[in-house]
Length: 220
Ligand code: ADP
Ligand code: MG
Image (tube, rainbow, N blue to C red):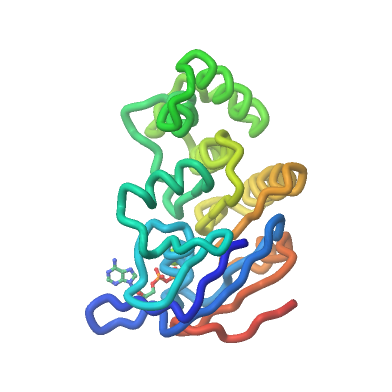
């Protein structure tokens, strides 16, 4: 379903990805693991069409993603993907509920229905009490739950999550992972999750390990 072949991405003299190939099937939960700086976020961003590799190919259902221009990649992301960024990246001026409704509004959903859907996702993730608060008024755990709700609200085919539990204590991290993994399993959604935490990787069907921008080992 999602395939990358020989991805290469460099920043100045840093080789972030030195020729990585991966294949992810529909409905799989795949963990991308590796030490800090090994290229995990860069790989996730290439797979999600957020950045373009210098060389190599990314395909969704056989169609090239990396050759699309910015506008087409944005459209493809909005229609197919949900992303939980490493740092949450909610819009600070909007309430939690407005943040979750935003992807639906981008996809031209009716405003009132988008707000209702956002509210119900906040309920599912146990943060309905935060609906009217802005990101600056939320704890790390609450922010991550809101970010997860925002990634799931459109019913995406693939969810990408970059260290979604990185800023959380182990109990809060486990709750976020239970909800995220439970929801994608139930919906048959594909989940690609970056982590350096073995307990998070344990939720995955399969692990892709990176070291210095190359695939170190693939545990099946
Ligand atoms: P990880 O997520 O595994 O910590 P990254 O993909 O963020 O790794 O980074 C891989 C390498 O690329 C690191 O050496 C990092 O410093 C470098 N890098 C990533 N993003 C940038 C950037 N925007 N500018 C410069 N260097 C970057
Ligand atoms: Mg990272």
